[in-house]
Image (cartoon, rainbow, N blue to C red; front, side):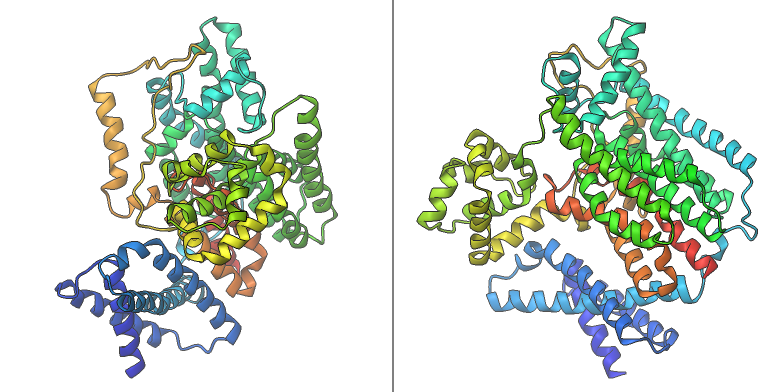
Length: 583
């Protein structure tokens, strides 16, 4: 009883600090009452003796969540206290209290989903697949989603085109050289469909709209394919109808369907890739081995590697896990290694022969540059050797002006305006400089990393989702000319997007943190229960996409970078639950 009260007191205090509930606020009673009831119920319902390894794993993941809470809101938590001792106490309270709270939360989730089998209601009792029914539903789902996206196409005609999209279109029309800064595979798709469109009209906007239409159709096909895959996994059709409805009518899906960005295509490819992987796992359980599925899987792996830079690196990390998971099948070696070879050969040799400009080196140095920039901006002195090295590649006087804690573009431009070639030719020297400064000023390095990445993993972040529209000014002749307009159309569009900040629970779908935490919870559940590890391969790819974003993200609040995780959430969640169904 004493331990329960102590845990309740520490966790309740931590929650009050995290939620910014004042110590004299009457709602303190509700917080402590909830924590006490929750912890007491947990201890009463979960008396099963667990192995030390599982307890340590749960504690590890709980520590990860508590550290994210502490680091994400650190400045806000301590800003009310000027005394250093009080600040340290606050940090210890939050870290310890949230650790206890998250341990109990993970235990609760594990108990409800695994031991008590609460999810049986979402699966059909007889999940034998009917190919004719699946095909029929596939076309129905596709039609519903596409029809829902058409108003966005008409409203944003010929598409939402940001500076990135214009840069790619300049390559298509010959204003700029071919570049892989934005994936050349995506740029070539734009060129191909624009060329088709030019056969039907001399108007550059009409021609370009053919690509926008293709992207919209491809995204709808991918979402319909994922929903039908859920039926293959045994999910009740009514739930699949609901998921289709969400794909069709959550407004940011419609916006991204006509937003000319590599992230939309990459997300559609990732949806298909994980859906095919889930189908391969199901076929394995049914003692089947479809060569067509593996061929399709190989093709999707190639696209996955070519349509976004971090996709290539995520796939490289993913390959050993794929080979180990399907090691009993010879086809896996041929499939995954062929995809790796083709994508690498394309990037290294074919693009070189085509004289495609590769992304500059500084593009992959976002986090280190931000850390160095934060160190200088915080006023830390550089020794003569480090100052001399940095002055050879950038104007140090410009760092405090150009540094933005949530965006790496300023620091990148400083290097580009300086001497990027010297940086490339002396990588070892600058790597050692980065390490030296990190050892001297770890606080500044940690601050820079947190500020640049916390939009991905921290819940209290304010950013817009799906509000981008129009065509940026350009020299290629593209401009926005909506085919539907009027006050009703504009207000309806605005209202649907505002619901993402207004309606509880529904608004969580507009938060990158929701999906990051969801991936981590599922990863914990699969690692802690041996019977689920056969399906862990499906959650590893989303995890690796997030990990590669954290290493090289250029901005903290761009929802589109997390779009592949957002779009694939149903398939990796259901694949986990499907394991529980048959366990």
